[in-house]
Image (cartoon, rainbow, N blue to C red; front, side, top):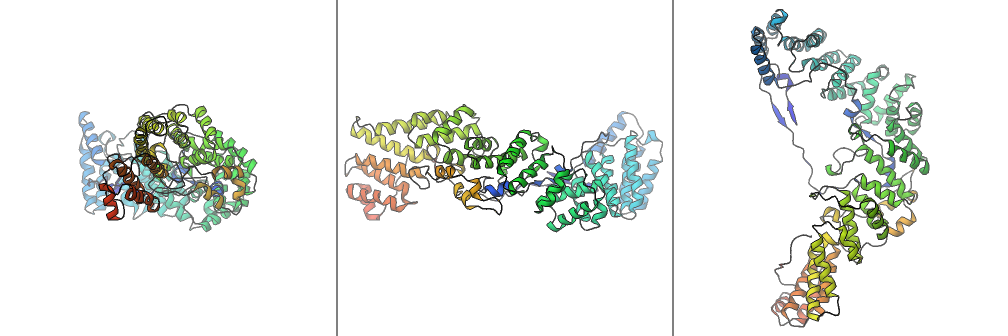
Length: 630
């Protein structure tokens, strides 16, 4: 983003450029979830985006959008004048005024610009708007009222066809508004700022924030009568910028006007809901348009507070189908403060509405429908909980086959979410953990299938009693290595205990535990978490309830392999030492059996002697470590 000093734009000064680089706190980033605190999710207060709330219909206008590229504009204008063989004296007049302004000779500068404006119209086609605008600016501080006619003249000149390469006509709206603001004419200033915004000049948004702050410290009843200020101040409050007391005072002032048929009644209801005045919110909702998305959303939340879950679910399902999904609504509302979540986890307003329906569907046992909504609206952590812990493997397989029959793999970056890839991959690993290996294979991406095939072939050979003992041992150890170094990719749980969703880098806790522990003053978890869900989710997702459980599976396979191998053998010692090393740092107690077996069974080998001397595992080079897993 480039921020320019517009006050220098017309004076020939060098523009100052500032580059703002977005910064994010060091991880971990936490997913934006809805299931772990269901009551809070359903009662969460939507927060507006101030700029989105102010977006007016774009008014038909010939005004050029404001620009600060003064040097480019000056060059283009002069070149155009030369090409058209037009007089250049106006450029000298304007520059003379600019030089005098820069040295603090304000009156002389205005005189130079006035001389320019007295030239015949044909001799001042390029600098008339500039001169009128600068005369207005030069008067602003000393006499705001006198500056206003000059800003208006700037727009008149542009409308009459005088060149406006810097978009000064649009910009003059904001400067005239500032002149009105300096005279405490907030109503006029607001109307001008809104007109400026309608030309596409986004700088008006910050100005309207300043207006709102002044209104909330002034005569509220006076300003509540003005339709523009009602809209702007209410937008300011519902965007989470005002204090609770300010919001309540504003609502009292608007109500005191006695006009309950106001445009924006849904926003007033919204403001009331945000500060916890549900009775006032309900009153304003009666005056709100029936088809207003935010009004319908608030009605759902009031129904939920009254414990009417079925009615709320029916209305919310209707809203999800009807809620606008175009770009204009993508960032209209949010339910979390800006900056508190991983930027990769941000959700559009329609997605947030859909997620609330998913929460209610869970409370009604509609687990597959809930999964589908969560998955399609980018709530992967919640979707993974339902897919991995609530649905049975067969239910999940049926769902995936019906809804996601193909994997849309497109060179996926590790942080990119792709539901067809992620849900199939989760299913593949779940089936593999259950030993349903043939069923699992098609759900892995093609790039992972060769490694999965290696694991399956080695595992099956190792467990085949018809094979020679030595071949079985070698195969079991190969399966152990494949499990250790590819376990996160091929066998891990998406959530607890392995947390594949964050590549095992940290733990995110238990969704089920959070769901049953979180309560609310109105909605109790008993209403939102069914017994069926609890019974299903309490079943452990793995046979070993330890983080990186595949390390233990790998160690067990290596133990099987060693059991088929002779004592005091270098290969046997290698198997025991390497497998113990997989566990020694995270779980020394579990690794201890490998250390004791190494010393006892292979005490005459080099590794056995080294272990006996060190009283623990000696260092070992591990050529099988392909570093695919933590």
